[in-house]
Length: 144
Image (cartoon, one colour):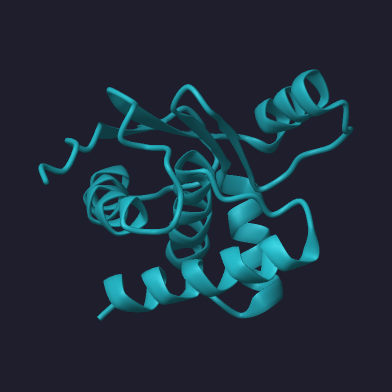
């Protein structure tokens, strides 16, 4: 049985407040894409490309309000046509709160978005636990 090709993945930095290594995150995204495609679900392989867009809290807050009717910034928003918006400012704040690093938070949000594109849903507690377990496994594997 022939496996379907994976989409291309691109990372764009559309914010100016936080310095980060876009190229490194894109290399990570390519490896993560392969791992996420192996997770349960049916999405990802039907996409031609996945665009990961790093934005400010202001921009993600606008998207959050427009598409989810929720005020304020969030960490990551995934659109099923292949866009993953990540707030670099929220990632930096969460890294300080949880004692992790900016790189770890960005990777976590990226994997989270890819798993949503794969078809995983974290709207209910069981789905949240399952998604968290898969994310943790993928991050640990790719951080070796």
